Image 1 (cartoon, helix red, strand yellow):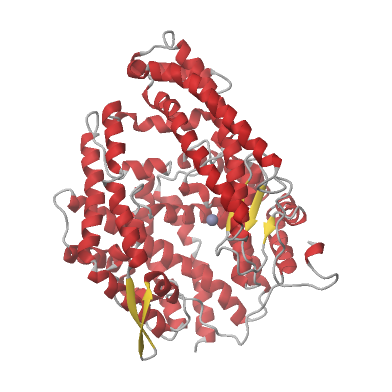
Image 2 (cartoon, protein in one colour):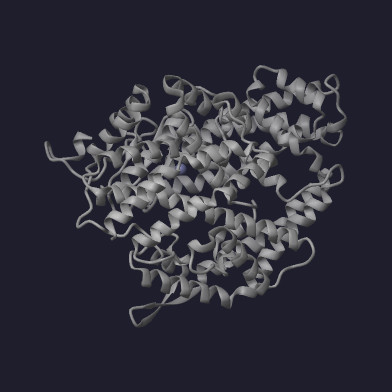
Length: 623
Ligand SMILES: [Zn+2]
């Protein structure tokens, strides 16, 4: 870091990251050699694939004895495919890191463009292996997994095969995926097109201003309530002009899935929640227990929403307040220099275990964090990692606000998660969305508590608590409202398509069911304005957020109860996120059952003191 600053002069912004231990440059011989190796490897796919493709029609009928050549071909393919995805992933991450820091990096653009061809080729060549994994009989698969070179992927393979009963014939499956491009995915693309070209009129002051939806969405984070309200109104008016198109799209997407499920129900009934639940590696009973506890404890989240409203001088929040920033109650916000932020985070992490503090310091010393301020940088923050070295990187723009400190703590949590898994095989390192935020939320909460304790006065504490407490209405009211809407919609869509007026009513009912008296009015156009309902590749992209939040809070809260036993069990839990279902993980490492509402209930109850503390602060500051 020393090179980037004048000796002895401290600065607020973060350091630049160092990528040179991966590759010297996008045009270097090292990158070229990597791509050559990848090409050569992909060439070997073809010959292994031949064995499988030749027997694809008889795959389900093969026995371990008659499948010998297929089994050795599949094992060879698995090894080659792991290696190829490592090479490809490494270069892809490199190009993406460069483009994040400088969107105009022409060499990186060229590299990324070249990689598209490799990605496409790899995806095509990997297809026969996934067909083998799906189509072969249980006996053949068990023989396949006995091979020590393959054994690592046992969990993934067995989990994927849980939905085997849904499979149609190979020809039918090919037909479906071929038609889906201009079928279900076309409706999703129509929505993206609408949302990127739609403009709306927002009353700024007394002047109506024309702007795109994205810009108006940005106004929803402004501190002035009247601006947020005007933006919300403008956005909803604009979507209302497109309500027939949106209704056609949402009805078609759901209709497509329901029809497909009907066709796939030959062996056993396929429910519209089966796919999303399977994808998140949880069971229906767990989802039900989660929602049950959440409904029971919704009054706590409503208390948080009411206290937030009171802090802004109002009785209730409006639907335009969902992303409102904390009202400024103190004169100036504290600026935290990057070095101080690192110290704070390392200190808070070290309280969990010294190894966690050392990890933070290592990330800084090895220059694996990008935190500079520059106009060429892409917005946002993420954590990524290089597949070959297994070394993580954290990307953000660090400007010194307390929310930047929280973001850094969050991304370092992701980095820690990948660090403790670095010796595992690739197939054991990928986990579902429901568990993806475990370490990040944990890191964030740890550091938020530390920030709270060091805040100079009540106003400083208020800023920290606002962010923390606002998570309750977001996760425990807003997300369940989306879930309730989507569930009711699918149930009714099974009978017939719904009219825009019915969709508005359904959405309003869902909002009022969850928010009740904590909101001034519902958000009837939310079914049209929210992208998540139009992602053609996956449905119910809502409950994983709620699960992730409460599961990680549940993990965090066990820290105190477990004392010195906590850290080793926490690391063991993180290491198993890619090779266990969420239920197995919780039972093995936390001694709790996720399909029992009690776990979720106690987790939510433990958040009560935080809400009470916030209420008391609001009373004190906003008399
Ligand atoms: Zn995250």
